[in-house]
Image (tube, rainbow, N blue to C red; front, top):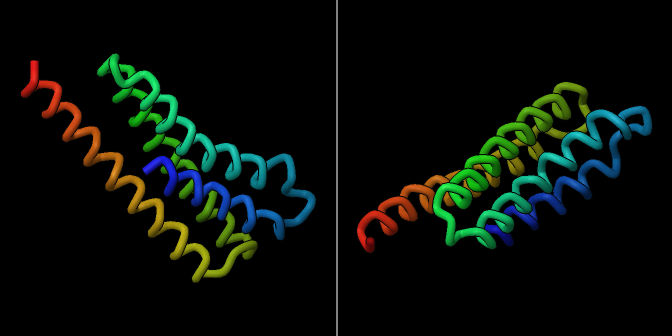
Length: 116
């Protein structure tokens, strides 16, 4: 899950290289930060997994950053900085990461409850 989120953040980085210079400190910066935040929150949460609520909170933050990134992808499409195909491809990959994150959150809670 982390690796998938990391790879997706790197894909966003590559896509944003073609954004106009006037977007450098706004849309480009925002979408890069939020996409990286997905991966980093997953990784940081895993590092603190012995604290259930901290782990879950980081996974929840990753979901929030994913939603933010998807919003920036919408803006990128509407501003015509990315193609419809790029949008659909990236958006569907965030669907996959989110599904994995939700599944882990659900299973982690069940696992922790069952083994105590």
